[in-house]
Length: 178
Image 1 (cartoon, one colour):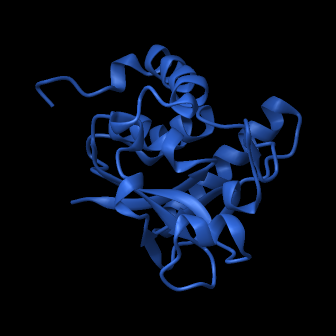
Image 2: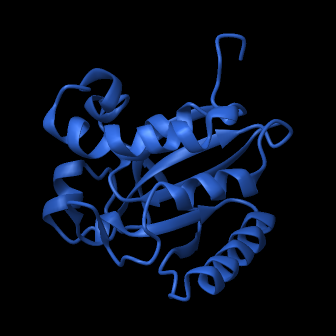
Image 3: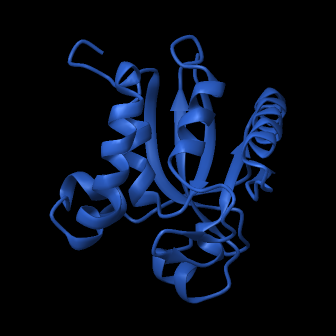
């Protein structure tokens, strides 16, 4: 059995490789959700008011990785106290958001947010939204980092984030046997 969730944590290029590396995650795909425009493209999402947020759809096996562990990774990959801005990326399409597909996910996410607010002593701006339509990103955005690891954005934004992720979550990263 698999479950799904959509995570918005800034540019989807930055979070797709991290979630894809986790044991128990069976599928990761960048895309858009939460807006009013049908068949959005990255250009539309960035240049017009579509209301969409860049997300990654994560499908996972709850018997191999818990939703709480996914949340831990999610909150480590971005600043959930920063409204519509992550690193050099700014705009409503970069909102921190969790599009939940199960009522249990909502409860666990809200509890995690409450804990983080107490720990950080700052408001968490992560939006909790029931999942609706997921619009897959254009093919050139799938596996962006793997295919463009020497591009400036990959070198200056994605690589440092993945280095920290790899150190912190080494025990959760897939091996050849997974």
